[in-house]
Image 1 (tube, rainbow, N blue to C red):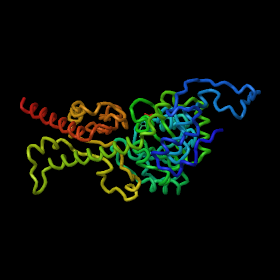
Image 2 (cartoon, helix red, strand yellow):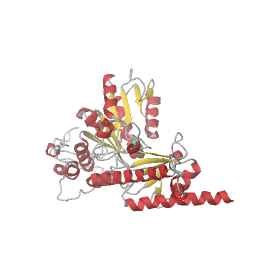
Image 3 (tube, rainbow, N blue to C red):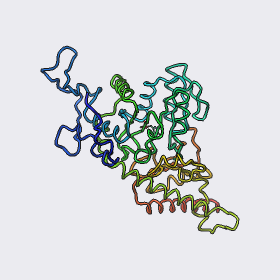
Image 4 (cartoon, helix red, strand yellow):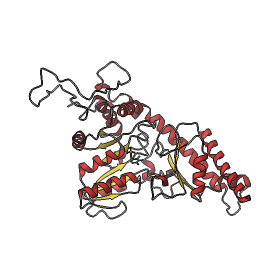
Length: 404
Ligand SMILES: *Cc1c(COP(=O)(O)O)cnc(C)c1O
């Protein structure tokens, strides 16, 4: 069994880890990792006997393991400060966690609807499994699933607070930190036992791969999850794995920049909203009203009321690049989504292209007047101008409709 983690890198900074943590696993002189597409690997002829491939036989069959997976897991393990297992998608990763812990009572926070569906599916197959809210009492709860920052608002929860409650009840705390990958948040430092990411989002970061990661604090948990993954073929494909390897070295710069632009965009939209609000001693001008009057609410951790100091300290490099905007009506939300030019009107998040999504299309429980925004790597001034033109177009459209 090859050692995934090179302890030499544990003390180095995350950008260095993302570039070098798997150096010891590269067998060719290539600087950029080559992609391996073979599904089968030659036996060491001298070693193989019976059902024993010999100690030097690293890979046998690709469902069980391949070099790109080992290398990606090596980097992810070091960067995320645990033991990483790579899956075919974020939801497959969620399934991997459930198959390992086989909980009987799950406390599930608000968040991505797909995770809820996976937990419900698991409950219906396993039988006798109960699902309660993460704010409920944890009597009999054996697994707490917390999503922070939460989809779609980007608001954050205090991980240490949930860790205390979960551990007091004898439960494990799983944190879905998809919306704030390192360096934004390191959930193990705040008491998480398992961290989950949809690698389709920020880790991949280019809207061109589907994958998921489970990171366990305990090496034995990761080993058990790899065993089930091999059994069921839950692993990521070779191209997706290789694309993920290609993406990790730029994770820190991408995510910090995206989070910074998002915080500025949130501040801008909130200031437009407030400028249009009639308050004592403030009568908005027609120009102010044109831009901000239709913004009913902007939500993001940077605007979150009553956010705790601990939740703030969880995010030393920014909260994340996802936020939400609520309008007065569904028609207004859809109009703006269709009129933004630099924000692709599409689902998903975390990529270098800015995206805007009308969550109601995929999540029946979502507010129909809400848009989720994922900020990419376009220049901030251009993104700001894009919002201004879309809001002005909405104003012009409504003014014209009112005259009819
Ligand atoms: C997208 C997402 C998932 C699911 O990941 P897939 O890669 O689409 O399977 C899970 N959790 C969160 C918070 C997500 O945004």
